[in-house]
Length: 224
Length: 260
Ligand SMILES: Nc1ncnc2c1ncn2[C@@H]1O[C@H](COP(=O)(O)OP(=O)(O)O)[C@@H](O)[C@H]1O
Ligand SMILES: [Mg+2]
Image 1 (cartoon, chains in turn yellow, red):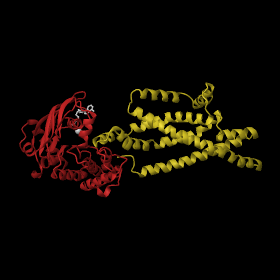
Image 2 (cartoon, protein in one colour):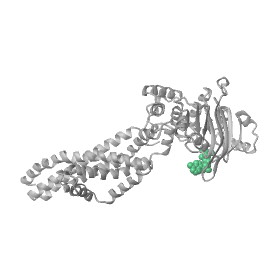
Image 3 (cartoon, chains in turn purple, cyan):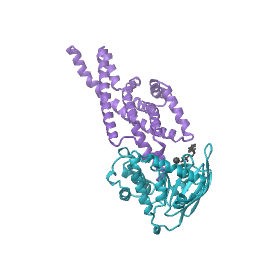
């Protein structure tokens, strides 16, 4: 690699990483936290077959899963502003990513809830607990353990997907890389570089996932 | 075997004419009386409705009709309110064939959880009782183990400790040793025998003829959703009146001999 290219690489590394720390990570953390709240509520509504609410959640999941994320982002930012709902790019991205990820994670959580054997609920009833106590102390913790690997995968997927927020002017990592590339015409270098940084982020998360899974398994495996 | 002086012969439970159908009639008018301190063994071939009977009187299944007098109060088995069901469950214990220990809780936590949630005890009180109960079933060494780290016999002993914890008026056992490897059956039966000696009221669905003969004081023989014969344990075993009971006891005896 020529020294000019190397200098550009080093120089732009921080210019890309910084928006990563300032935008990509906060966006991911905020949106995934909201997504988890949505997911648990929606999954429990489905699991418990709550009347009136369940059809609403099915409609929500149907819409989210049936439309592209990029289109949802466009609607959430340009669309809303277009009809007079003033919203900045970052909160719009948080909103859309939360709703999008929430729908997918809700299905993951629902499957995990349904995988908890019915005998666990019955045992809870027999010691006198009520439905919510059983959900809180027994069913949800077991479901979280089952859902941990797929939810971690969703989180890793979401870190990469936040690059789409560049389309609605959120100055996250990909946005920064595009801007430098547009100025220097070193497209290959800049896109490889931003790819590398995403790879570092995903790899770190994968390590954390592995550590978390080991920790969960140490707490008596999820069987028997 | 039983310490007669502990028994006070107060009626604790009476079931009147319980009926339940799934696709077919599973319970076709079953009535039963249990006195405080009784150990009632329910025998009968597979599919005769034994499990359904226990499940209906603890409302895991809703009976189609029937009444229950429990601890001095009368309940409609088909239309009990949530409050009534909760009240009954707080005074009863249930031991499942496949243990059903809470998989995300240690042995001690399994025993404590009902006390802290349903019975409103503090953590300290619950822990004290939890440890006492685990001592009673000989599981105090393993109190911090998760169910997956315990053998079937150990899990069932913890499940018994969990059922005992709130000091229930009666404990229902649904084939507590049927899922166990033969060498693990003894440890569970000996815990149950100890409870019987201490005067715990129990209804035990079982295929363990020795237990029914020597530990229980009453025997109920069920078939096809009805009680074919019931009476004092020694009388039913020594002098069964019904042809079907005789046949069943003969078959069970052969089965046991065959196993040994
Ligand atoms: N939830 C259920 N749905 C349909 N049929 C059931 C259900 N539970 C039990 N049965 C049927 O009721 C009959 C009695 O079952 P059960 O009470 O489990 O008998 P036992 O415990 O004596 O073997 C069986 O024929 C069984 O198939
Ligand atoms: Mg059964």
